[in-house]
Image (cartoon, rainbow, N blue to C red; front, side, top):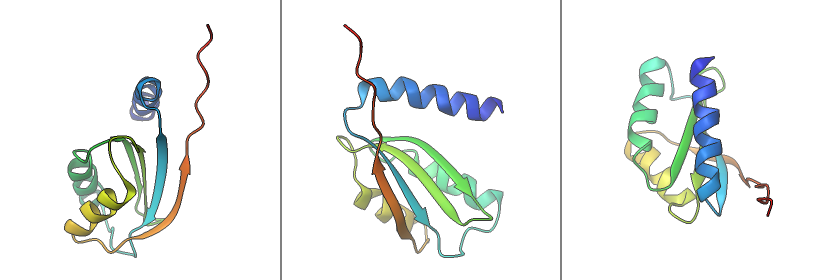
Length: 103
């Protein structure tokens, strides 16, 4: 629970500065087997430009990545996953609607 709260807090803090925040969901094509796989993805993709948060699910074989499209791209993230040895299929991508700051 603490980990989730930390990720949520970081996402909210980062979203204040990100103008074009997006969520990318990819399917790892049944290649993510264990906690080591999840850690490998989180450790290496974290360094891609614009990545703000990463969530993985071994049972669902999905990786959900929140990133700033002004600093990174869907293509660079998919390429980075491929460089780690994963065949991925983009399942979805959506823009995160951000609340306007009150004046």
